[in-house]
Image (tube, rainbow, N blue to C red; front, side, top):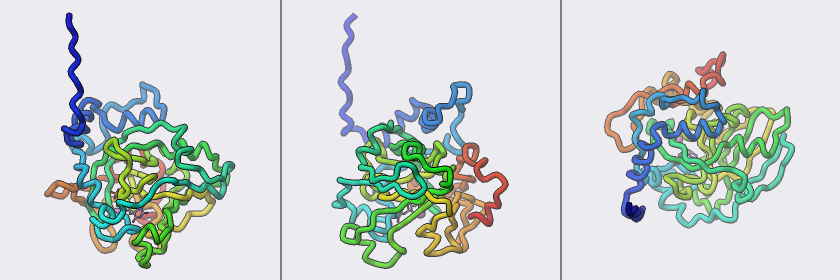
Length: 306
Ligand SMILES: Nc1nc2c(c(=O)[nH]1)N[C@H]1C(S)=C(S)[C@@H](COP(=O)(O)O)O[C@H]1N2
Ligand SMILES: [Mo]
């Protein structure tokens, strides 16, 4: 029998969304594959069904993911980052690791990426402003890097800092935030297998406006936790200050878990508009990842720790 190989359709002829939607149907459980791989879960522990709400998630078009952004270092308008970050140079890039850690050093990006396996993970990102997207990220668990640098037993929190360079980041020439942008996680949140350092999306290198070359994605927290353009990771025993908490403490707390029951003081958090959709949908507790993360907050008052 003659086996004739059909030439692959050049990817340039297919829209990004279609490739990914088709691949996703094929994979059936989407991001869960990545999660299982990262946690090394035993086959018997593999969850067969997608996380809450995920079944009706359609990927947000590449165009929207890369032109509707928050990245105040490149302007406060949603279209500013795509317009202003194009010529931002992300190479060479290094990340300083300091604080309560056994291997403090300046790590080149290549050195950070060499030992890790990049995986695709489809996660929702919900902004506190009330919009959300579904994005196929490329990245690796933050835990892989943290384990490598070995925090000491006193380390309880991780602080992340974005590059501060007003010559290259025009938004930093105005005092919109107390630059540089910083964020923080509790160490267990940082070590959670859902927490990733992202290096790409839609199978491509991360666009500058989405935080190239390295940004955090914490899918159960509001988008502002997912800090972009990371140049420093510091381990501490005290809860670190965060840029948005400093700017408006009553509006943005340290935890920032997606929580439809705790309103932003100036607007409700119970619904969200999926970019590309018309009707608003109900916001899910922990952005729908509660079955995987809720136990980290057992016994905590999430109204006080907002
Ligand atoms: N350094 C830095 N990181 C940042 C921001 C920012 O202004 N500066 N904005 C945050 C906010 S509010 C959101 S909603 C997400 C948006 O990520 P996206 O543009 O990739 O969708 O990035 C977060 N990370
Ligand atoms: Mo946001």
